[in-house]
Length: 81
Image 1 (tube, rainbow, N blue to C red):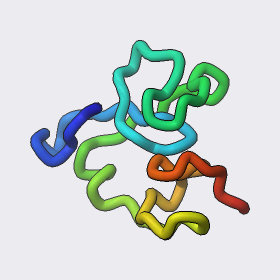
Image 2 (cartoon, rainbow, N blue to C red):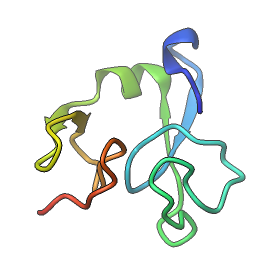
Image 3 (cartoon, helix red, strand yellow):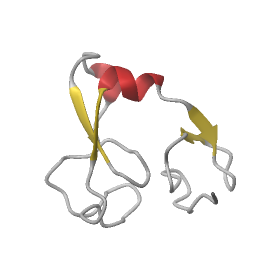
């Protein structure tokens, strides 16, 4: 896993398009949510954007997750729309 809090704000991150966890860009399966990332493709953003992105609370476990996340990286459940 990538520790974004040890990275400069202008560095680029590659995130899983479903759970929005930072990942290595050459992976096919997200190591956090175990979903295939090839259909939607990874999301690129700066570390600053990642740190300041709006958050919401997972409807199942109550953990804070990125607002645009479709799947909770903590409990691995899909979020309703």
